[in-house]
Image 1 (cartoon, rainbow, N blue to C red):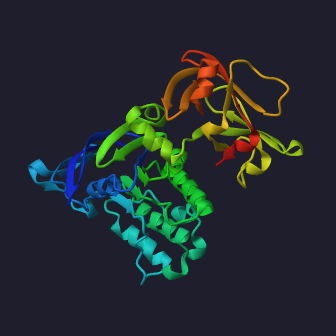
Image 2: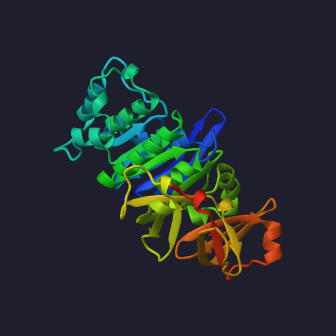
Image 3: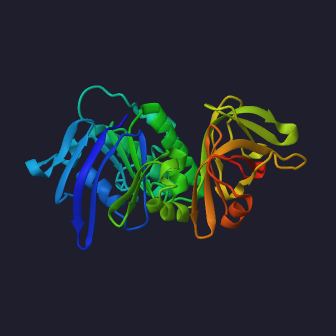
Length: 363
């Protein structure tokens, strides 16, 4: 569990970042458009940017207090930082870049083993290569490994997916998830792509023009007027934590079951990631605009996923209605405002959510 308190004002030329927030999630996604202050926030936490006014503490340890003229140097903050560009040492090979992280680790015995990091990030085959022989995605994994080997109390990742294509982005997301699960290191992850963040966490800090528009869980923020436009423009997404319940290769389907609630989803068999099988945990992604709603259960149709729920909240904007449906899991559904009016949908009503197996992505 993380306990990061940040109360700062940072001014740079005509831009100012000002916030007073407490971040307690294991992984917090920092989301906002370019120029909103995401990197400035990380730099201030890491000690690379001195605030004009500020107080920052990590798990009760004060690392910045301008009122007391107390500024902890960056190398003593026990914070790992992975920059948007990898910033690896070009004159050292991969192994020596990683070992530099080991040297930076202060204090007693090691909790994070070199070989474990190499295995989790799948970089054993790269150890004797020069940095310029590694691809962008490989360099990003090496940079993450080096930061991990400092055994940080907090890991900052600034746009770790921006320099890689979709397939590499998926791999890096999986590595970051595994790191969080294996070593329980609190993380702040910056991205302008909401879908990347939602695969990692439901806890978001939303920034715009140096101000906090929202701090909390995605499902609470998405119906908050100050956050809606920012979130909607990035692309809404339902992300469900589920396990693989049944493989039906003959019918080209896989059944996925919610961990916490009694509902299942069927997806195409080929959408299951390589190496995943029965009882494995996966994340299931469905876009809200791929979901239709009905006031009654429907039979005699080819759509396989039909989930009953109750409308808990609604938000209308620019001719569209966003419905929050509670089926045990919260499901976001996006329909036209004309459809909502025709069906006379209101909070408290029972509805049925429909979506095709082909629209389900598994991560």
